[in-house]
Amino acid sequence: MKSVNKVILIGNLGKDPEVKYTQGGMPVAKFTLATNDRFKDKEGQWQDRTEWHNITAFQRLAEIVGEYLKKGGKCYIEGSLRTSSWDDKETGQKKYKTEIIANDLVLLSGRGEGTGDDSGGRSRVSAAAGNNFDQSAPEPQPAAASTPISDEDIPF
Image (cartoon, rainbow, N blue to C red; front, side):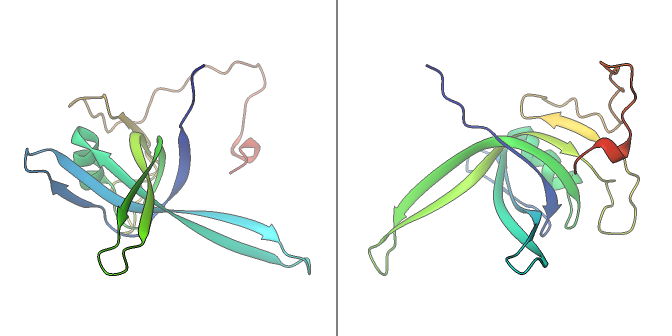
């Protein structure tokens, strides 16, 4: 039986991505993505909760992340969870880190998001996209139903 390890997030970058290169020259980008949740507490008051996600991208996707994503920018990420462990040198305790390895990215804000230049464009790039990164908005898909969908119909 096949198993599934898939994460889908839409959020905002907490800071500019950090891009480094391995000894072999492979680019690796690391950044944090914030997602927000709103709920009512026991007293009926609305509360906001922010969850921070550690994201890592490799190869061409890492280069694109470094070039086009900026602090405050909104993006859609698809990837998989990866947990690593190590022994803390000072305490000897086993430590764990869970991160999301990105393999697909959609830019949901303009290239200059966070600097006041929000063109509202959307661009999708996959880890397997090679060097064919297209900054134009994707072609609209034909609607499956005859009723048009408006922005108010989207739950986020």
